[in-house]
Amino acid sequence: MKSAADIARAVRGGECSAMQVLEECLAAIRAHAAPLVAVTRLLEDRAREDAGRVDAMIANGIDPGPLAGVPYGVKDLFDVAGFPTTAGSTIYADAPPAATDAEAAARLRDAGGVLVATLNMDEFAYGFATINAAHGTTRNPHEPSRLAGGSSGGSAAMVAAGLLPLSLGSDTNGSIRVPASLTGIYGLKPTHADLPLAGVFPFAESFDDAGPFTASVADMRLVWEVLSGKSAVSSGGALRVARLGGRFRENADPDQLAAIDAMAPGAPLIELPDIARARSAAFLITAFEGGHLHREALAKQALAFDPATRDRLIAGALLPRTLYEEAQAFRAEYRARIEVLVADFDVLLAPATPCVAPPVDDPRITIDGKLVPARADLGIHTQPISFTGLPSLAVPLYRPDALPLGLQLIGRPHGEAELFRYAAGLEQQGTIGSIPPPGAA
Amino acid sequence: MPRVSFLHQFQLALRRWLTPAAGPAGAEPVQVPQTPEEIAAAAVEAGIVIPEACAPGVAANLALLASHAARMREDAS
Image: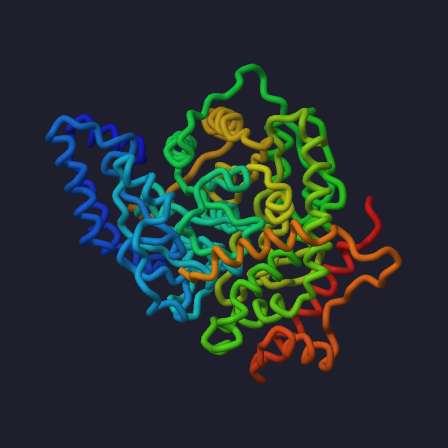
């Protein structure tokens, strides 16, 4: 599939219509998407209305916007007008339909985007696997016997397979960056709460963020500008880069460490203090907020929850409030400490996941020499960054003959423009880049 | 979309504003419920009846969370 920027350019220039782009996209999805188990709802009627509106604007001499005719999908927790927002759960299958689109989807639509599908996820976004009891397990387009990662696995798989040029996901502890790494595409967790969350089903509000998946840096920058309403203007000058050491250099693939060292030879190796404590505090806050969000439903119908999430949610609902407050106090102090520590750098380099995608039939990974559940532990390198609230762009290492694997480019608060500039340079050098899987659309 | 979300966010924010960052000086740090009795008491307080099928998983998850609480409280590096 063409990039979002190329599609919009062609539609705005009259080379093709938004409807033509849409029909080609729908045909490709019908032909290739089913084995991925990534689509939960195909919105053909809605998409044709959106595409028709874009074409009518062009016919009337009105510019539809920078995403004119670009098809996209959203994780199944974004409000879509006229449909219940299920967050991947059967519990909300009969909920009242959303009155309006989520704010992020509305901004894409206002820029000319065409919403095509809602996409699979771990129930209530609680997991890094996209193993969903209602919809099935999303498959990795590069190797269907492996996981796509989660919780925004459907959003990642569709872009990685070339069936959509962009999609939206949410990231609480790594749910965009983990699947981006495992499927070989770009995924952004923005500076905390910088991109609109209105109309997004919450998980743990202390860490929840919405963000895009794309197959190129240029598209990522374009979508971020639309979602944020800002221009990605970098401050200019040489970027100050550091490598994250300590825990981030353990449980990593040798290719990740070699790439980081090659990207920034001689760059300072800095260690974020108390990283294990930070990850544990993030676990506690997430468990408490998720558990308490669903407490009433757990009290009424615990067995209606996905078996993979209900025990975790119940445990979270039983955590003492004072422990949660203790974790929040640690977080406030920790964030302030880290912002001072990283203030002298524009980009911090770290692995995105500790390994390539694990097999679907044995979803475990090795951490500190022990086999642990991928669902809980694939976010070992992303969860501490969420705890700091810093922006983090997952980028795919260019590895033509190997399974995808990503890095995190971590910025200062509101430093996304610097991340895009640095990533664009790496992409131009051929160090990073998305590689379509065999037989991609 | 759960209509509790706004209320939930408001409650969390309010609690953070109103609650001191730490417990009283000298107080024992609060623990994660782990024994069957502690879990049962916490479930009653939360208004949740833990289904039999969930009990082992809930206990295992609480044990994991207890280990995270212990790690969070380790001495700073």
